Length: 244
Image 1 (cartoon, rainbow, N blue to C red):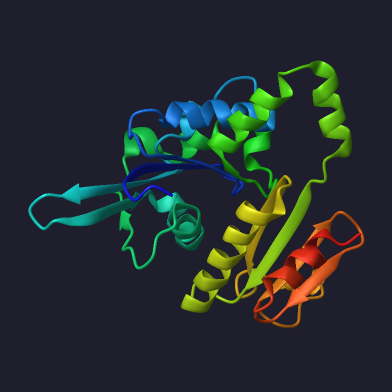
Image 2 (image 1 turned 90 degrees about the vertical axis):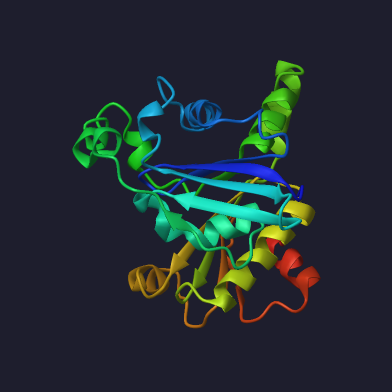
């Protein structure tokens, strides 16, 4: 990741995330992410009404006075609970996220809720954490020929993963960073990852038979597989994820 960059993130009410990292600080904007969500979820139009309510931004810049790289990270109240996930996708450490003041004219909950009937997909949980650039790469590849696109769809394995953690702790953040780097750099297959806090969702831990933390559950493809405890052997973790 570039040392200096602009990062933007757009969440859905259901918790899906699409984000972009732009070293030029000029090429990616919230409108691009809205179009990305439209493509991902099959919406009739880009959900511009989510901006700014469900957004977060990062700006890493060089301060000529201090001769140091500075980071400004801001998030709206509706997405502050995703700070650990944001730290992971943007590669941040020890950053103090600033809560952006709520603007009634653009962030009125009743206004957002009024779109639910037209865009029900936004309120559903799809376990999506998607980099906008990866989405564009996928689209470019699929546009080469219709035949190649069909072949790719038929043969690709789409992994569905759930990481069970206990609270927003340093251990949780470290686990997320390790897993994110492993999936991005070595899995080489499409995946979705959902992070579940057992304190907030104990019923999910019970449903997924989770008794220790951290636990990574491969929910798809079947059979379901689990990795429990510390991950010292990343080759083994990757082997379990890919196991048939």
